[in-house]
Length: 460
Image 1 (cartoon, rainbow, N blue to C red):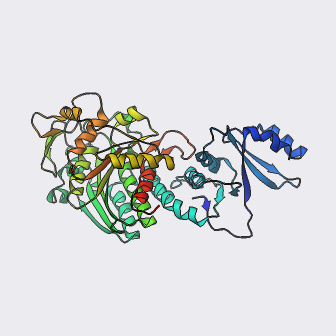
Image 2: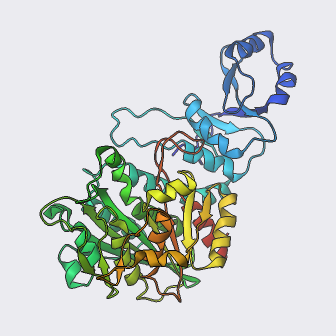
Image 3: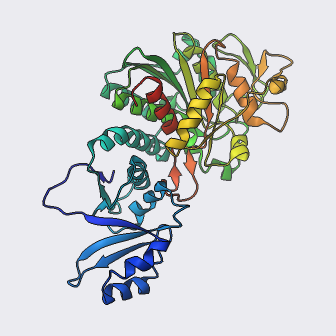
């Protein structure tokens, strides 16, 4: 984290000033000849994300400039790029900026250094308002937790380690924690979670873990996360190139933990329940097979259409379980379908919900916090594509189209229709550097949800 909220009073930050393109000429007239020549030589034209350090006559840093480009196209999220472009030092923004600018810096400065012998030094930004710290730190800490989990490879983040991350978060906030591991899943009636993960080694057995935090009675909220720590595809084995990013298939669980962290750190008056379905989809003599039929916790029998669609199976049992205790709202997160990426690309978090009110609220707040989401249709006409001749339901569609929709419709079969429910089919990754993100694990949708929840419970 490179936002500095408290610093040695003897240390003076470098002032960081933004310049629009049409302001540059007037600004240059205030510079000395030497400073002007250096500015021209550097090629600085105040274009978006350009930076230039102005030195005084003694060679000390006088001010740091950054380009803001066209005044009508400038967005404060671009501040995130500066966290990576500026030389390591302590900076302070000159002028008036909203909390979004500081959020952008905090997200843009993220680094995953777990395996780096010598992490790259970072620029730091001074924050002088306590209110900004109180608003942003829950978001930034929750985002960092989510990204760190997603970026950790599966050899160091198996089912036990992901459960441990949930346990550590629960302990931090005195939440009540429990787990169900291996064959105990069958004993306690979580057959689909056991089915997906039973082929893994003894040390990496499937599990369900949950914790409950009593933060208040304004809302009872349940978060459910898909925690497939690695997805080979099972017997419907993925080709090698399709396995490259499968360490991120536990991104749904990471998002549930990240949002839970935000809620608890901010002290929202919510009774929070978090449920994670954790497994590794392996290949062995005990792997589940296409055309197998298994019972679910709900009692419905499920025909397996493809073992590479395992995420919706572990979620089915977890969603049934989530509905068994009183709750006002259930949100599940899963890296579920490639079809969602085809529909909206990798930057947008698509969601499905049975509640128009929640859909509007989350969408509205997504604009405020620069966290793009998009509502997708629970189109009932596609439900027939999940029919099975020998079981109550097939877990994949009988057609090649609308795969994200049919996956959501499958999950809806395991949700009590009287409970408000929202399903996020997320990518959890960014393939390219963006102002507020570097390549790697990405946080999608939970900033918008956190802002919505704050508003709903009167804590914004």
